[in-house]
Figure (cartoon, rainbow, N blue to C red):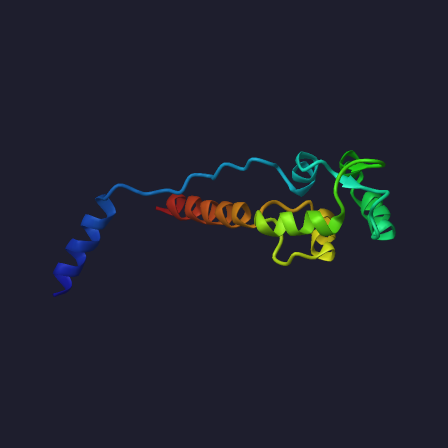
Length: 124
């Protein structure tokens, strides 16, 4: 019986290796996504204090904040949730994602799987 198992394992090692490829990223991070959605309207925003802090911590966010155009954090958080950028549709989750310069959740997970597979195949 052990010989059968060894034969199966040897045959499995000869099989072609399936590797995940990195998935299409689209936007590099949440900030480029915000820009593509028209940005944040600073005048209409009720989270101004938190937004100012976020801009201090993440200077590139300034590109996505506008005085007279764009969306509120409430509107953007609903869009971000629907598109898989954040786990809850709240302005706080969106601000947290901005602070981390987060990428879409499925992209993060796919990249992690890809990296683990690469390490596994390199050990072979």
